Length: 245
Image (cartoon, rainbow, N blue to C red; front, side, top):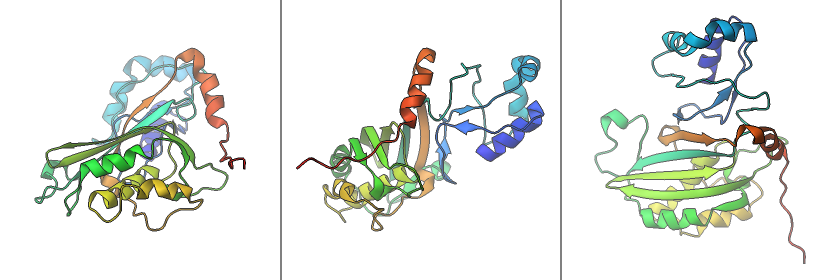
């Protein structure tokens, strides 16, 4: 999506349009609440502002839309100014599989899932931890993250996993869901996902859940006056401290 949007914006504003996005998503992952920032020449914006969204919609493919646009303070950065990101992962254990019209956004699971056990396991992951076991490590990047919310809700045969954190590592949400699915279908105990937090490297036994069930649904930001301070705080490198004997 980012590449398609950048190419279309470049055509519209007649200049390269590199985007800064709130959260990068793997191929096959959906986004209904993505936020992106872009520097646009003042003259170009003055010409396009009133018709920007309509003209952009006419140029984009049918599966990509920009819902709103606004001029932001110079301190705004879609990635570093964010307070938190919220993702939802949808899975069904309906023996008939996912509904045909939702098959691209819902994972069909062949085993019956215990949503209560999944919820208990998810609760143990809330807080600030080193999630190295659930991340594809990138050189120079920290794997310490703070999960603020991790809810598992069943509605009939459908289960929605909602996880909210200040930021996520590469493949972290899909790895977390993969661990919860192992708990839900009885292959692992409730304590297993949290026990992996003691690892300093990725846990190979954790299966990354397929991309199609995951959607970025919302990104939150502070008031305009606090954007610069939030960006500085986000850029602060977090390290794991060893307990004092």
